[in-house]
Every structure is written in C-alpha cells, then in structure tokens.
Image (cartoon, rainbow, N blue to C red; front, top):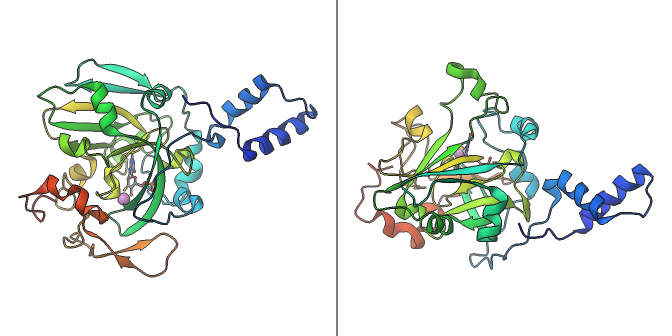
Length: 308
Ligand SMILES: Nc1nc2c(c(=O)[nH]1)N[C@H]1C(S)=C(S)[C@@H](COP(=O)(O)O)O[C@H]1N2
Ligand SMILES: [Mo]
C-alpha cells in the first residue's frame, strides 16, 4: 500500500489525541502510525488526479456519504450511514475464482499496491431517478483482469457482496430479507474490460466510507447505480450470464444490462430526467449517462428496449 501522507487534518486529530493523553508534544512515529491505523477513513490516499476533461462538478462529500442505498443494512437512505460503522475492514480479502489462470484470495491493500490508484470523476445515476457526481479513487477493472488472465470460456464477470449476517442485519432476516442475499451483479467480459469500468477503494481522496461500499466496490458509470455493487467478496470469471439480484427480484423491471437510457422508461416511472443531489429542479438524463461516445459500440445492433 502506498505510504499515506500525513495531512493537517490527521496531525490535528493526533495532537488532540495526545493532548488528551497528556503526552504533550511527544509523538513518536510508532504511536502516530498506530493512531493512523485506528482511523483508516482519515488516511489520505496517494493517487493520480483525474484531469476532469468533462469539467464535471463533484457533489460534496457530505451529500454522497449521507444519502445511500445499502440494502444489507436498510432500505432507508440515511440509516446505513450509522449502521455500517460496525463493519470491520481489515483484514478483507477478495476471492478470485472461475475461468482464470490461478484461483486465489488477495487482501485489498495488496491489490492497491499491485495496481496503484487513480481518481475518476464520474456521473452516477440511480435507477430511482437521482444522480450525483463522485470523485472515486481506485483502479480500472481491466488491470485486475489482465492479472487474473481469464480463459476463453470466461464470457462474463460475476461480482458478489460479502455474506456476513452478523454484520449485515438484512442478511440475517433469511426469507424476510428485503432482497435476495448475497447481492450479485454481472458484466459481459467486454463491458468489464472497458477502460471506464472501475473498482473503487476510496472517494474524495480517502478510503471509502463504510456506507458507500467499503473496502472495495464496483463503479460502472454508464449503467444504473445498482450495477455498482458494494463491499465485494468474490469476483468470478464465468461462462454463463449471471443472474443479477435485481433481475431475480423483478425481471420485468430490471434486466441484465441496465444501461442508463432516458428513452426507455422504467415500467413505473419515466427515466427522462433525474434530480442531482443538492438540486431542487431536475435535469435531463443523458444517453449512457453521458458516456455514449465511449460505450455505445458495445451495444451495436442490440435492441436497447428489449435488452434493457
Ligand atoms: N451490496 C450492495 N450493493 C449496492 C446496493 C446495495 O443495496 N447493496 N445498492 C445499489 C444501488 S441501488 C445504488 S444506487 C448504489 C448506491 O451507491 P451509494 O450508496 O454509494 O450512493 O449502490 C448499489 N450497490
Ligand atoms: Mo439505485
């Protein structure tokens, strides 16, 4: 993992902490690193900045971290903010299985060390009709796939959220859960390898807040937000198209692709407009969420009304 650089914020916290202990100005480096380890969300990540060619204006950290969808905790938009704090993020290994050169489990920190970190400022559009702009920190999924070396039978990538009913109350509800657990998502291999497809471990320069899917989540900016599966446990390269959680829950409403498309309405509401977090009025939803130039070739010849 890249050495965290010490920010004024961290020094301030450290000072407060040590003053409380009565240790005055005597802050040893071991004590400081222990302190840093106890506050992972305060660690500043090192990453390559996004030049932001689309000149997108990110939402505030407060907006993005206080309005979430995380059904493992609650269907409420704000309850998971507090509830998710019980999550233990270290150690957290990710399992890689299926049609790949070598199946293995890898710690998230080791993935960060292997692939490095970059920033991606992306539009994000939930199928419910709200949207945001987020400066994610992570690495493109193709870097991981290059490392895993999927075989010729690997036609899809399947993603699964951690299944841990002690941490996620909705998973403990069994048949009475709000959705089928664990949460599953999938991408066609060419979608998965697209340079925009991203694994995020942070946002706003810091590790992901727990409620936003720590320690590692998928981000697919041209698809509805439910494709961007949180708190990953498994990534599998598979031959058959995975059955996604929302497709399994309501196949007439949610398909495999879930590409943002203002011309194809949800059976219960229009998808033509969206409310950007923090705004009172709605804005037009863009085809493929504004990434049409980059991704439309992936769907050439497909009937986007039928393959939604
Ligand atoms: N495991 C899991 N992943 C998930 C969800 C969820 O409930 N559980 N919600 C999805 C939905 S509907 C959206 S819009 C985004 C929300 O991401 P955010 O809470 O970081 O804004 O996460 C997606 N990933
Ligand atoms: Mo969503």
